[in-house]
Image (cartoon, rainbow, N blue to C red; front, side, top):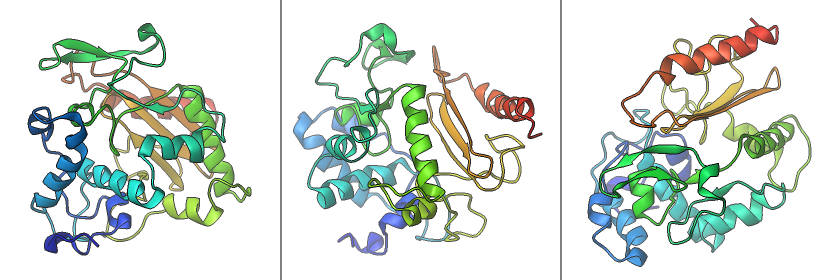
Length: 273
């Protein structure tokens, strides 16, 4: 358990389920950029621990970047290596995923800049972001944290998705057990009415970004910059949608209407409407 009294009851399950009571987001980067790079990750973890909870754990469902920043810390302690190394050794290399990686701002992008879609102009970085993470906190933390900084192609996301779906349906794998994948893909029932599983969301009854035709046995996740993946575990369909909706500005929110329409159209064309 965490040594801070108000967070002593917070577990990795609650963090993964967004039911730990933590705030959704805080502009930590404003303080972090004043510190030497090597001090920033320890500093942000301390800042989160000092941050008052918005709610008592297990009472309210609130998507929290802060929770996933803490999950990175837990993985580092448990695995004995940084998150990037852990993912590469445990998942990406065994699956042959060559384009999935976590950003490192101390190094040039591993691909030519023009292979990356641009996001938006950052006033304090004084450039249009392309080839590095858009999220301000993740950038201040070296390019990635538990909540942001992942790059990859639709094909590699599909390969990873396919592997998880096969395990879910019972295929034996050295990556994860079927029980583990099914647990992560299931609503937890911690907060009544919450759609969150573990690290994943499930379709809401109304106004889901998955649209109207994904079965209740589906999981997905959206990203602030305009990315998403939705997987129908009953129909064995995955839709990977990677856009840069925040280019040139995050004020463009048309994707909220477009994404469910896209999912509906795909399901209609496949005969599931």
